[in-house]
Length: 189
Ligand code: AMP
Picture 1: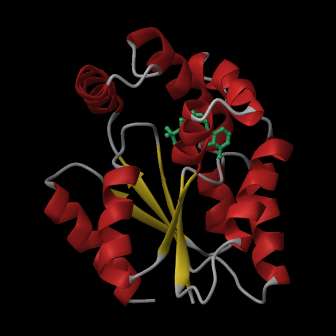
Picture 2 (picture 1 turned 180 degrees about the vertical axis):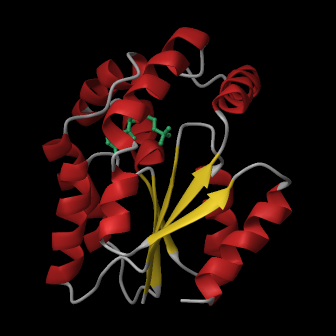
């Protein structure tokens, strides 16, 4: 069972690379951002709650996010493994994930940190906002999300190092180059 956490700041390429890993290894994919955006699109109560946080560049509260993740995870049958994209984003979420997987007799196989310089992230997200129209890809919200990444999410680097699951990847280069480095990390597990 491969349980891969794909990690990185907003704009680091988590989503793009997740899709490539899913294709190559036949894993299930959980993008918590995509789950929330689908809820918003469907006009659900959860979507309305999530929108308030997303538009401010803030994280959705841990308890809510952990419940959402558990229910998505429970929906996967006969899974070869899961790629977690955008989760965990806090230490509390990482601890909850560890517990959830342990209850299923599993663990995180590796955390892959796509490390991209800050100036590059900003440019990528602004370009993505123009192409995709994602409401939170505007300069002010991007700055807030990067701040939140540094204060709440980046501490997970040391947390996963402590778990012996950390794998650093320099995230600059072509999509293919990065995919090849990720595949190498997974194949060496
Ligand atoms: P993403 O598509 O992963 O960049 O997520 C977009 C937004 O969804 C984030 O800025 C957060 O507001 C929210 N979000 C996604 N995943 C999480 C998570 N694991 N914990 C809290 N908020 C999240």
